[in-house]
Image (cartoon, rainbow, N blue to C red; front, side):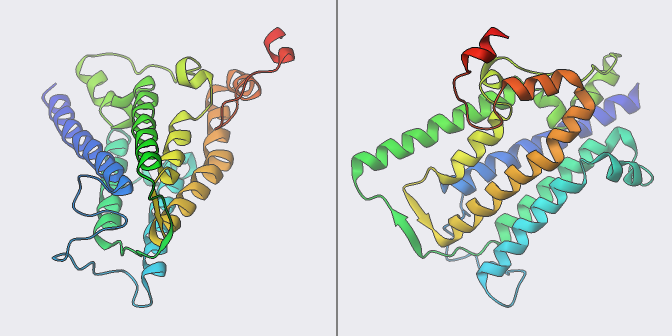
Length: 256
């Protein structure tokens, strides 16, 4: 019991770091509140960079590291190998720690490329775009809450052990935002990358790479895993619900 409580305490600490890292990433992308952002670094901060060539390649390497980690560690084949060195009960916590570490590396070593691609200077349009960004942020967090945030942060399994509860089976969520699109979290995340009154070259690089990765990884990695995990119910869900962009269901679909 003591070891279970100790593990839960460690999982809570890791989960808080994971939550903080994701909130910081939101501020980093939106260029608000946080000191280091995609378009702005204070004068006292000189990013070391990972490349001696140029900021574009440096930032591309950082984004690639993020994508490679997210593509490999959640895969069953990779888990089967890593379980020889990482116990299953702490695998999720190790995953969250690595996410935090890669995000910290990305934020610290990112080199802003301030050349402007487009900029909205009309004050009314500026307010409208910022308002849309706030709405998108709220919807993103609502979509996350609809799932199991404790499990996502690596706390759920540890809590189940302390409470002597059996781990629940994976459940397919089809209500709320998930009745409009299969991946509302990714829809809102992609929107957050592009809803901005000022698009710089650095932001354009991040938005383009993240958007490509989200779409590619969803189609070729995540959804095949969900079909394997949830079976026919997810296949039916795929037929009835669009992947990213909600649209009204046809009369034929409604009548089925």
